[in-house]
Image (cartoon, rainbow, N blue to C red; front, side):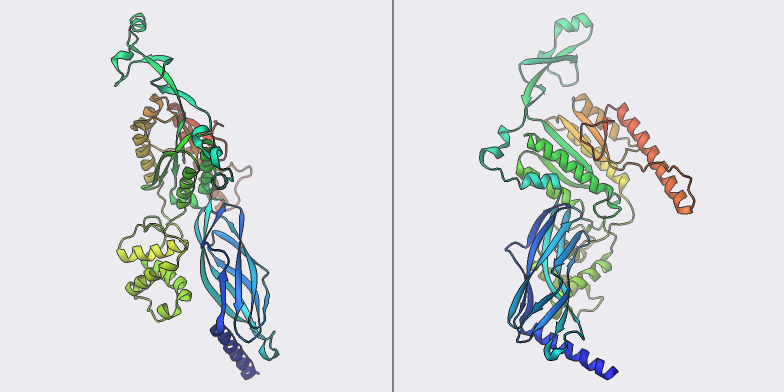
Length: 484
């Protein structure tokens, strides 16, 4: 019996090998190698299975091999493939988190039915055919894909103008003389009456200038894809950006972590919406050596695992420690990748090439367990100081970040923005969990309760400190005007 089973299995493997050699393959439909999807929405791509051999076959348990940041389903999951035929299946892909992720191919179990043994043996088969999925925030994706055209897309004619301090003809207010105010603006009579120097502030009509400052430290990705704090931040930022862009405002973006990750100068229109959406999507990238939880050996292992099905001849004989050859061959294989990102930060050129390979194919990596919250707070403080020194003053600066701690550089930057009549708002990125009604019964519940109490205290203290500085505090997920 054992000999019979082994013989049948061997014959099945031989039959499937002949099928593959004769031209049993899978190709994606369409011309683009990258699909664009709004987070939470589903896009469809067609896959074509071709059986060029002279034998009939059946494919069962069809499934997509994809990033964990995508939910992929194949319909139907069972197909019959007569000799010299082809069949089409639908692959439904839903983006769970913004970013650039890969669908790496299709897997199935093949039943070669030559000789009537259709139900006896199933041989696994993998079609390695990379496809990229660019998952963007939903509000900005709608604005980018808007079908409106022609004059309706001219942002200069859209939206409303705002009245702000400037060189207009209409008096806005009298205020105290400050450093840098021209003497020609001094209101001498009013100054004499009040006993101090006052200057005339005029106003002008212009489009509003909005800066969005976002904390993107790796610990904010903790949680299920789509449900982490940074997922909520990205949704909220994109909603605010879409609203301002839709009414003609110019919007800039600062993405901050332990170091600045993106700085987009203010602009308007759909082109700026796409830039902001892609910058927010890049926040999910954790392949940089200072954000990744994988060292070079672990990165190399993932590269080898992904590359071997794409080119078995080139990668099959590589040793586990032959990293130089692996990096060289992986770099050559990157021409088949759907994405063309910048090289991630790495310790060595070899490590950079390996990390670049994973980024190009949309292979995710876990974030490093150590957080970067303290360094992110310093990056945000430096960014706010730079915004306060900008020649063109912003009408609104909105920050998405956890409650601020004790930073020596943050209050001066916020105070300078407030003195410039800038509306400064702070959206709390990590809302504290509600207090438990019942006392904890286990050690884990007690630890969770203690952590929750500490987070709630940080929120209260941070909110009080921000309000003393004249900053409006809003909750992530609310509209930007809903303050607390």
